[in-house]
Length: 90
Image 1 (tube, one colour):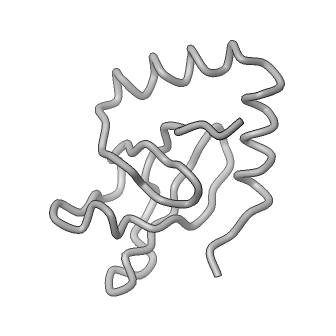
Image 2 (tube, rainbow, N blue to C red):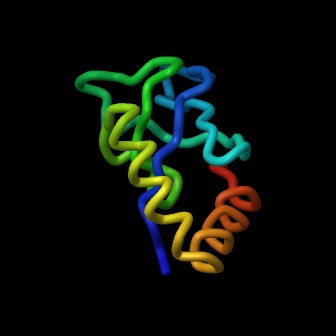
């Protein structure tokens, strides 16, 4: 199962290549924010992450509610976090 997971931008690591570090449930990794280049997110912003890309900006309330709901998926959620932790942009 593939999920779009809310993550908080920790830092912009390469503005020219549209790369940011995002944190999801304590796991940090680099993602592309290129799809949001018209209004780039910054540190502290919440985004919906899917397969290494920030797909949309969301507010903190929506992120909190979404995380609470998908945590109830149990192993599907933990499997997604494990995949998130073990993948990287190359």
